[in-house]
Structure formats: structure tokens, C-alpha cells
Image (cartoon, rainbow over all chains, first blue to last red; front, side):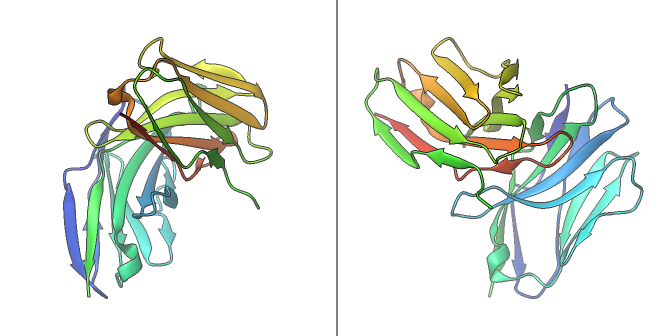
Length: 116
Length: 112
């Protein structure tokens, strides 16, 4: 079974600075998807960014980018120019590609605090 | 476009009562998922459906939990009888094949 590990329960960053959240995963599959979801205090689960394992290029969405290291099974999220609205829980998630399984496996999350 | 709609947003009930959580997926999505979020266990998949058929219910904790999807636009998660340890936030999500899942706002369930 696949597992996702987020080793940083909490992180903090100064407004306008850059922060990187770590995620590692364990799988024997060669093709899969990885995601970062954001959960603000409002409790919504918001998709931040998605990476397909067969793509070598790291995904980017505005101030959010990932560092995907397939061999190391690492998938970190970098937030540049941090804003107060970035404060939230961030969850890393894994999903198989093919094989009929659409289920997401989540890490335990990292709580990000943004200091003004 | 309307997102995934869950009701109720909050539910407080006494132990032993039946609880029914409801979900309307995004129109056109053929996958529907039920997750449970707790501090201790994080986000766990309970069950998911494809084209209204349950595909994987291995996460359903016990027989007190049941889920149905009578049509493409509605699903329920039922707990009977409820226990205090069922207190959690329950999320419904929907997606199309190989596309990201979209989550509802969740139902915060408190069993007294």
C-alpha cells in the first residue's frame, strides 16, 4: 500500500518570504499523480497544484511550485512571496494512475503560519 | 459552476441516534468519494463510487456505517447507531477519471 509522509507538523514563514514544505511517499508503482491541497480555517479542501509522475518538468501555479524527485520519492512544495492568506494546513496526496484506483492517500499535513 | 454540495454543515446528536450525511457531486463527475478527517488519523477514504457503484469500501470502519448512491447526483453516508468516536469532519468529493478531486465544505459531526 502507498504511504505519504509529511515530516513537518508545523512551519512558519515571514510575509513575502519563501517557504518549502516537505513530502515523501512510498510506492512500487511507476505511474501516479501527486497533489498538494490547502485547508484554511474555513475547512475547505482546495487543490493547490498537481504533478504527473511521467512528467519530468516540475509543476508551477503562480507563486506555488514543486520540486519533484521521482527517484528519491520526494515532492516538496515551495511557496514564494508568502501572503497572509497562505496560512493553512497543507496536505500532500498520492493517487495511482491506471489500475482502476482513483483513491487519494493523504499525508498528515503541515500547518503553515505566515507572520506579518 | 456549483461545486460539491454537502449537508448539513454541522450536526450535533446524541449517541445511539441515526445520522445521515448528504452529498451532491459536481454534474458530469462519475466518481464520488467519502472521506473522514480526525486529528488522530488525518484524512481517510471511507468509500468511493464509480457510476453509482461502490468500488472500494475497505475504509468503512464497521457495519454501523453505510453509504449509498441511488443516482448520479446524490449520495448519503449513514451511521446507525452513532458513537462519540464517530465525531469528525466528513468530506464528500467528486471527480472525473484521472482528474483532480473537488471537495465539498464538509460536515462537522459531533456525537455527544
